[in-house]
Length: 261
Length: 367
Image (cartoon, rainbow over all chains, first blue to last red; front, side):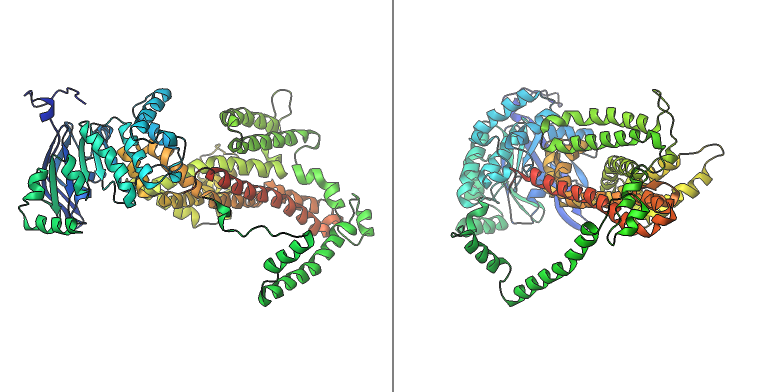
């Protein structure tokens, strides 16, 4: 994944320094409820970021603004050089480069696994069917589930479904992948098979933003860990510093709660 | 996965033993069920023999009034004598092979289209069948070309008219209802408001009123000299009316599709129409097969109301036959029973097809 892309700034930073997501003073309200407050965040190409925080802290909402599943009211978000606003063309352009893996998989139940994977390449990327099938089989092998290609999602276990969902995203060959609590809906024995796939992806240099409470995963692959509470980014640090030497009291309390059990 | 995992092992023994154990379990399971069973048997014994006696044993097919006067049972002779009037209405007698052929072609196209669920090879043929079939039906019915004499559509009637009104009704009401349902869910206020107003106004008005307005009031608004055919107005009235009901059925289906499905489509960069066509509608429509077919059955029967604007549908032609000779008039029970039987046959087929379709589409997709 070392695609050299031109930057708009004029300077020529090395590709690993490129900022693929820039969130600038972004605010979001649901009616009177202030869900996201003054979010500032810059994600560089190839970076792996883990976002954690108590439920209702706005962490899922934050990553969902990055492919416009959620709107925002003030500030701005730029993804891959494209300003995410009301412009439908821009939104679709961003969504072609940013894929999301959901907590509840959201596979299409009326299609086979293979059809789930080839749908977007065929209709969005206008790929010939044969080529899309080959691509899909390639990614199904990568998530070690190729033998299930002709089954329907309802016939698979949760862990298998989530791996299919990851493969479905990969078939779009995205630049950025968002994970919204990908293991929270899984039975405990299936968490590992999904995390293994995510670790592999991270090691290949995929730009990843991952909302999760899997702290082992954060320690292993994250470049930065973000802690959110009440719609704000409270703390942002490298994993060693974050886990060994958290600065804010709220972070300490949160870590003590999730690491003690 | 296995549905039979919990059912008890098959009973063994002779047929008689199994019959006894089956009836004990299903018919005489406790005193309350036993009373119900005995009551139901008594009711059937009271009801069925007289019907058989009237309808078959003492009935006659003799197509004359004299023949009917001799028997105490049903006078199917009325239907026998007036069959062509009942089936084809006032369509010119010598040309009635044309609506017959048109009806057979129409049934063929419908069966071919419905059969595509079972035989995927037919899927590609559906559109060509309609594109070729409908003009042929139109030529047969109207004539005026290829040496066929011209028959004004005010002479059309009977079963072909009922079938044409309802199948054209289904074909146009379905997509229109779908657009209304999507419109009602739209984020664009103008489209949403128009859809809501349309659906609520049409649903709030009886079909008779819609047909009556189409037939009597609508022409008053047209400039002099411009006329729209009465049959076409009735057809449009039926389409507009059915679409409003279908729209609400489809909206129910759209609401039943989980939000995650919309989000998955969005996050894969599919456009609104791609998402709808490939992801949402296939699921939504599958969920609403029973109420959709319900609407179609209801519409099929509602086509009988076109009689109030002077078109003779299948029920209308039965009335026409009853009035054709005062001597037949008292055999209205037989006439209506015949009409009811044909209506039941068609509606029941639709219901059975709907059940079959549901089963077929669920195959392999167990959740």
